[in-house]
Image (cartoon, rainbow, N blue to C red; front, side, top):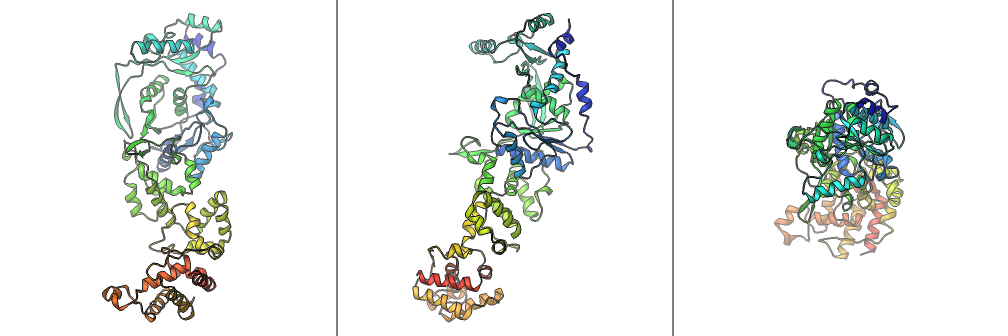
Length: 551
């Protein structure tokens, strides 16, 4: 008996690998096109690190006219959660990172290299496992979990490296006859890879991000097909990345130590290995110590957090690109009107150590991103978020025509307003513009310098009676406020007041503050002229009357 007989005994009805090599031909792409993938397990929420990997993978594929696909690695079915694939698909969709191929729902997919769910590729993995057995590069292992535990315990006592290798690989040197007999006797088994490696030999590897790295060779006889007939991650990813034509594997650097094994598997299977790019994790400052963002401790680790808070997807992507390439910030400054699609990401410019996650910086990016949007875009995105998360805001925004005017204040000019960082900020930032909110609630009026009640009444009454005209342009409007200030004994210019403070009660800025506070109950708002234009005379009158009444 030979290895071929053994392979046929284990996998009698399995197709030859030539069938799959023909079924999944090499991709017909232009020279230099990159094929990348996001290959998560459906075991819980999508981590921000997964989104980071996807964004980089998507960009590299786009930049080179390549392909980005979504593969679901569900071979560990004990850990799978309900609707796990749907959550992954929706998370990518939320951030407009849509794959060219792969899973598009729990059960549907698109593309010619599927199935894109590993649990549906069982026959393919068996074909390649059979091929390895035929070559004498894999073998059935009859060790029970108790046997493996016993080996580990002995290694621990002897203080030597744990694992199934060399003299510890009990089933490695069974003869073909012995293996066939055990199978015929009905003994249960798994399939192990027969590693040709030696730990005392080194391999040199060039990682696209980390640069040149040396490792000891892999000598572990890892499991490639488990007792349930499904492959392990290591074996499945090698077969899939070969058949799907992956050119670059972009993944977290916790996988760096697996490189010797993965390269060995590619070599022994006769495949050309992809390039590996190991990304440093996103870190968090925890009382002066750096640690990885944790699914358990940090709400911002979950991609769903950003949608719930209403942080714009474009802001999250800009922030992640900023972490990815340090030159992104300068590029953005020089290209205010361009979309991030036009930025060229370079893997060799990525940091080899983990960047610290900075929520303050992310919210600043959010402000900038929203400031670049049109009133229509702000309205649509805020309304979409409100429909899901805030009933009160939804009612306010139901009046689309008026809401568009509110969002249009100080927008589209050279220095657009930067008061909104996320959609959950919108209500607090605009509710004073809605009479039903403003007029029916007791307001605080922080008038600042001018505190005298009679003086405040006089400013508000006189302004409406003598100086306000809704048809005035901005310069005329401001000139009239100066005139009002002068008539009431205030300096028309701040400079005049600073030169002769004893000559005036206060200055025009303080008079403006009274008007602003009476209108909005806030000292800091976007342009007051534009606010008045949107509110209109009736609303201004009601607000001034309310302010006088509440003095």
